[in-house]
Image (tube, rainbow, N blue to C red; front, side):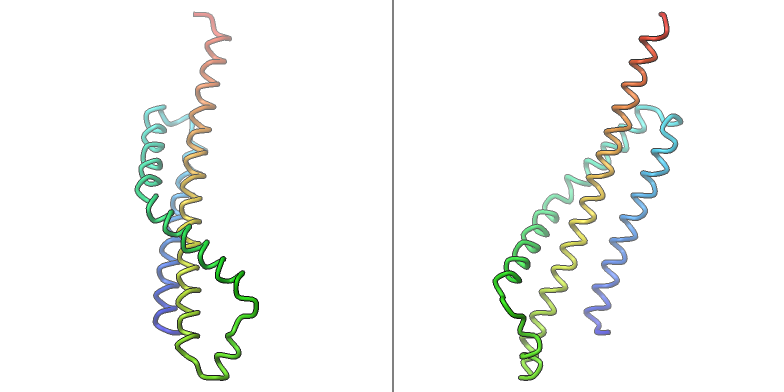
Length: 143
């Protein structure tokens, strides 16, 4: 495996590990909903919203890279990899590999952003459910 591919794999592994940690934390938070106060849940919601806001430039750039890569792939009727290999046009193969690596990183950045959006949605749902449960309790219990 080339050094560049090794670095790419390490970067992707780090991103996946971070995404997995956030999803596991969210899952355990969802299970312990009634043990948490409204303030704790709102604090977590704020942190996720801030992370989404902080990553917006990265996500926008990743969207541009993915769209460009896909547009290039649909415009290229027949991949030239085999022909380039036969002709020993390594610079073209190297450029294609660089593009594929950039595409892979961009897709993982989008996946990480999607996981953050999912965490945000779950926290919003938990808070909304808590509000609904409190409203039902207030209706059923006399003051």
